[in-house]
Image (cartoon, rainbow, N blue to C red; front, side, top):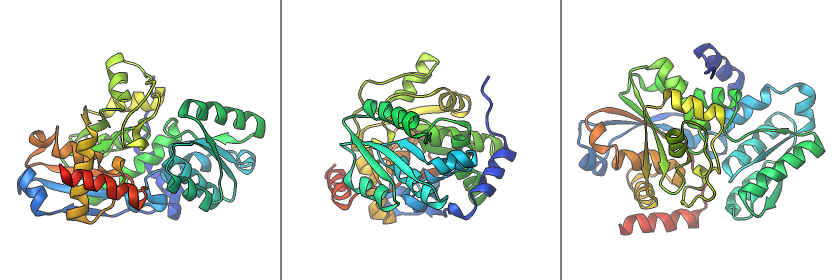
Length: 328
């Protein structure tokens, strides 16, 4: 039986995180272009988690896990596997807690993200692909005695990410729906759980890229599923599999899943830059892409919360995506 985080546990986690994470602001999106698409009566509220330390929501989960390690385990250091954002967050958390991090990333990882990890003092191990990355992490864990900080699975991870929605629901007040991006389900599992505790009548809508729809596959199978290969510009949302707890919490509290294409994501990135002056990574535009696309008619005239989850992208890559989004 899946044990979901309670409101008391989520509040306790937020207190434990303290000033190591920011209470990121919210913003009411008012703009000519967005109003032309959704109508002037659609009230859009953004949770600007891209302004979090390290540029994404990820420190919440990483710190929650590490703060609950035994003191001797924390002293031995941590290890992690990531396309980038989780690795950066683990490096930051290790520095903040006075320990060391050794993170494993694919050679294809964005060089900007690799450099971010190193800037926080982490040792970075580069491998050929994500499957080899998980094998390498297991070896490091065994040989060096480091604790593995999973990118999206575990009760403390979900409690940490639930603090995003704890803040959001209290800052924004009543919402008709909250839209959240899904990769492995670490963010979505916590957000969905907290929204249903605080605003049970609000819809929670999860969004995946078309080329990385492993949570859709998991919902269809009724259990965690795997993907041999993901193909999407939203590399932060391309896990090779889902896991038992994250899947179960998403299945329990997410009302519906939708998909968006890479072109949808690029168009959303371009619009967010034009109207909000936000330079988001592809994953950070997925919720907006869903609102502009598959959820547009359903949520027209509603009060909708969007979680803008990250911004770790280099200038050249961002410019290229936005140019393509503008061309559409």
